[in-house]
Image 1 (tube, chains in turn cyan, green):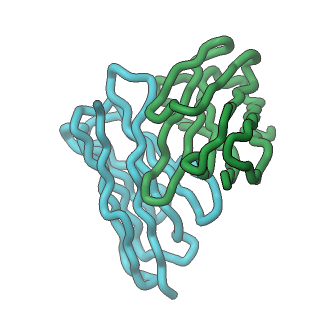
Image 2: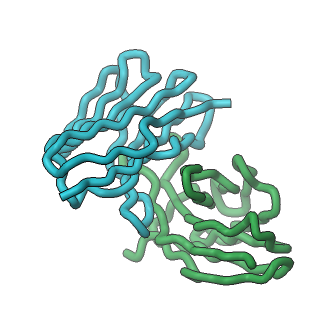
Length: 111
Length: 115
């Protein structure tokens, strides 16, 4: 079945450093979504990417969808303590209504 | 709008007891989902529904049952709780299953401990 691998599992950074999490699929994806979950909270939708090579920005966050639509990345510039949490990707193939979630990358920001 | 509301928020069960988790959404979404989240395992789909009166199995359905008698409600039942079902349970909804610019809307979760 479809697998979505997300790396790294954990990332410690000093406040102000950049952060990137990667999402890789074994199959071509129709779209990919990104979510953020604060400690003790629930996942909150950030963005959806659909087009090959698509790049979207939300303030300090940059989301990319690979040319082959098999990988995606989330990059945070100059992390802040408010960025702490777990970031999940969720990818959907053309044949399924249900996306597959990656296991998430937990970001720890040290002040 | 309240979005997705889950009850209860916390529960402790003894092995063998049964319980029902309730999820209610007020966004007129067609699709609803139940996930469990365990440390290091991400979100695993238990069951889902593509509309009122429909249900389907997800990745980890064993030991759970669901019902979607009304469009706005999606119930998750544990018939005979086991310690392996200790987890955080999230309900989510979406307008369609084809991908939406609004993504999934998640409830705040139910923390279940089975002793």
